[in-house]
Image (cartoon, rainbow, N blue to C red; front, side, top):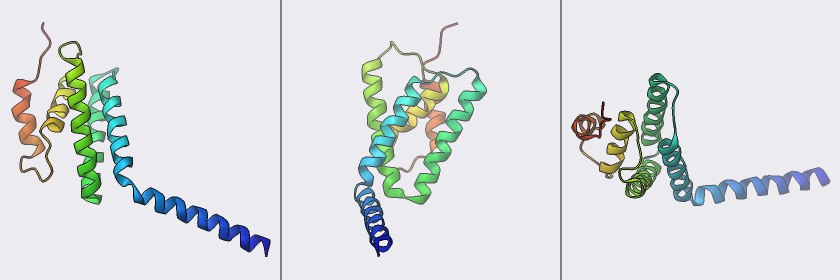
Amino acid sequence: MRITTLLTVLFALGLATVVSAQDNPVSFYEKLARKDAQLEQSSTFSSLEDEKDFWYDQVRYEKDLKTQDSKAYNIYMNTKRAAYSEHAESCRNQCTHSDYYYQQASFYFTYKSNQSLSKEAIGTIVQVASPRSLQ
């Protein structure tokens, strides 16, 4: 009898945890987007290939999220846009980022729910306008 009671209590606690996690997916995706943005803004890479892989994985994650849960994707992307805007405001001309970073940042800056421009089109437009290092 004690085992049945213990299993019932554990099941109830597990169910309560799942329900509470489902109650606030907004908070989860907002926190995740801010954490990801901070990581992206502070990352340094040992090679161009490592950075390319990093951004490829990030884009793939976002595409998968969009396919699996469009509401979560919109929350994530809107929060990413805000985080990148805040970083740009505090950074101004003092930060140095790579071309890959600026290309991805341009996508976040221009993101709007149900957007009609493709990421490739935006990347082409911003590629010309992104800051370049002086040689």
